[in-house]
Length: 109
Image (cartoon, rainbow, N blue to C red):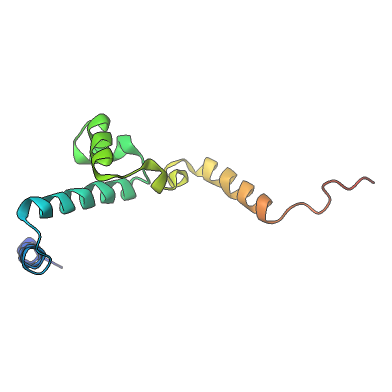
């Protein structure tokens, strides 16, 4: 199991590499990490802004402003995963119907 000290040591190494090898300033590194955190939280919630904002301890409007600032659009996430199991089954049924059309449809007896 990784300790918090090991994680911090790795993080320090990452900061040094971003600063030295990529030529980023500390404010630029901060922006890169901030965007990555916002994207990660939205990935975890399948694009649900309210849940993502709650995870970050922010209001959803604040998270929406951050998304706009970093050029993140809600369209990037497949929102179906955040809905209930029943709706997920309905989406799967529609998807199956689109890929395998009913051969009887349009045939008159």
